[in-house]
Length: 200
Image (cartoon, rainbow, N blue to C red; front, top):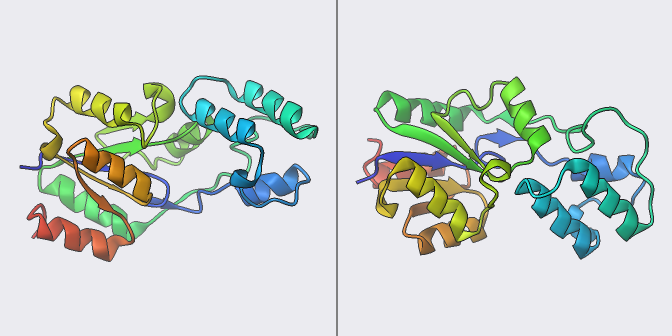
């Protein structure tokens, strides 16, 4: 029986969360995705999302691997173009789950600057708890990410519903025994929850 419902953040509850196009243009690059940058930098990005390195170290790695200089800027460069907006139909479903008595949590791959901005915009307020990769020191699709949440919530895997917009994260969650479903939109999410008799 499902006791807790866990949601991804970017691509599920929020939209307009991708910073790469504007940030790379600010850096004077022609790429539009971080996936086009050297593998060492992409590994550093993941390490930063796991709280293993600070943002200053990330940009040091960027300069060394690309031979480019980071322009002068104030504050977090990763947060400079981060302007997430809430998907209201999905938020309404989360509200309905809470009204039904379900505990609603967030399981998200995030960095410190984006985490701070989400809090400032009150976009985490709907959740009973936030499990953030940079604080857990593990990130989806690692099995350790899901196992640490199951332990914290004191749940058996089949007691946790999870939805995410990334197939690799869903596949990993299912491997861990979670009731995991790929998110496409609020209509499909509603249907999934009704099929599981979580909502009627």
